[in-house]
Structure formats: structure tokens, C-alpha cells
Image (cartoon, rainbow, N blue to C red; front, top):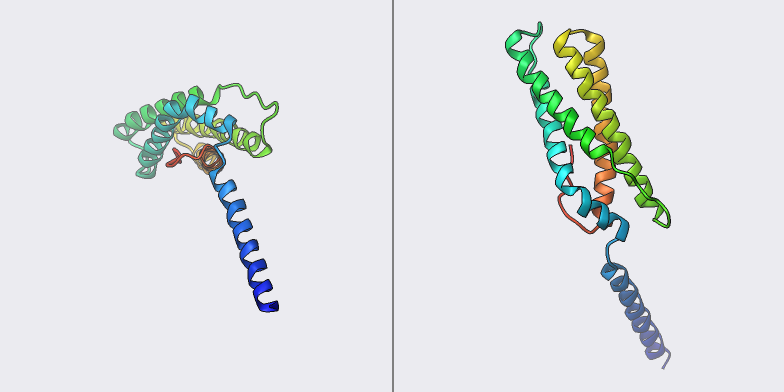
Length: 167
């Protein structure tokens, strides 16, 4: 009888755990994140792609920078900068939102600002190549990418969406 009592308790515990897990898994997306993704996804993907294109062009630089390299690189940096500025100018109403959502939105905003700075430094570099502007580009790009990817990944996760526009 003790064995049967133990089995029943074990089964009851397992059923309760499954119900709790199913409740968590079935929970809807965080409304603020779903709204953010819905409102901004259209602009975020092209901005991320523009930064990746500028980064790819910058990766193929040969020193000294030649005129034939400058124009396409400057255009790619300018396009990326405009695209990222456009997605960084949203206003965030954080009242009543979860802390994770606030943090993710802040990371995307700060990451976008750093990416804008990186593209500005790349534009300066194309006009007047220097190790200082290249170093600023590299540092801002690395930190901006990290913040952007963390924030975007978290927003997409909270919104229960796949394929965030990472850089």
C-alpha cells in the first residue's frame, strides 16, 4: 500500500509539473515586445542588412585606400548610417512593461547609436584615412553590434518571433 501511495503521489506531481510547464509554454507573447516587433521589424531588417554590407566592404579594404575603394565604401556607410538613424528614433513608453522589455529596447537604442557612430567614423575614414578613425569605427561597430544583437534577440524572444535581424 505504501508503494501505491508513493506512485500516486509521484504521478500527481508529474501531472502538476506538466500542467505548469504547459501554462508557461502556452503563454502569449509579451504585448510590448509584440508591438515593438510589429511596428519596427520592417525598418530593422534593412538597417541590419545595410550595416552588414558596409562592414563587408570595410573588411576588404586595402591600404592605402584607393579612390576606387572610397566611393562604394562611403556610399555603403552613408546608407547604413541613414538606415540605423531611422530605426533609432522611436519613442519608448516603458510604463507597466516588463524589465526585460525595457532593457532590450534600451540595448537596441544604444546599439543603434553606436552603429551610427561607427558608420560616421567609416565615412570620416573614407574622406581622410587614419588609424584613429578606423579604430573608432572598429570599436563602435563591435560594441554596437553586441548591444543591437542582444536587444533584438531579446525582443524577438519576448514577442515569440523567429529570425531577429541581427548584425
